[in-house]
Length: 229
Ligand code: 5RP
Image (cartoon, rainbow, N blue to C red; front, side, top):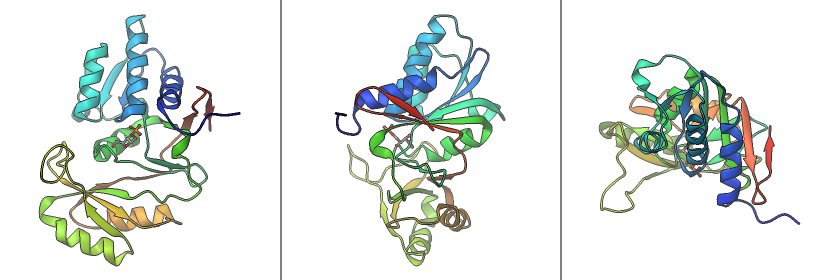
């Protein structure tokens, strides 16, 4: 019998399996979050064993971890194309090739990296799979556009909640100096259409719907088994 869904073993298995798919000479996008962190640590071990790669971090946290484990880094602003990127997700609808990302408020840089990469390898534990996306969609917003974007999200059937900082009073501020609205649309039947709607709103820096970007999804389970789709 299988163990219950999710958990650290599942995340590690997925992250390490994707790290094994990185090859010598690759320029690698380094995602954000606890599952991507397993991939970064494993890549660091491979670099210590002689693998020659250059990494591009998607957040302050992934940059710090990559430095710690010895992955040579390039700045995202200097790189127009990557061979591969490895990143996590908050929810994965494999049928629709659509993801919700942005739990770490890093989805703007993550999407730049995902689009720059020839291959995006998504890493997730099995609790993240869903037939229909219903996770709130993070929307990074210019502070001055907050009220306007809240209004547009509500008109589109969503319920926006300003993301609050965990350890201090006040909102989360992204690495880019913006705010995050977590927008609950219930079930998203047409992620591509919602993605277009959100992208069309002035003041939306980026939203967390990643449609048609994943080239492979590595799903780990609590027994440490990985399925690649
Ligand atoms: C950060 C992300 C993360 O990849 C996502 O939140 C998943 O994180 P975790 O692997 O810790 O569950 O999109 O912006």
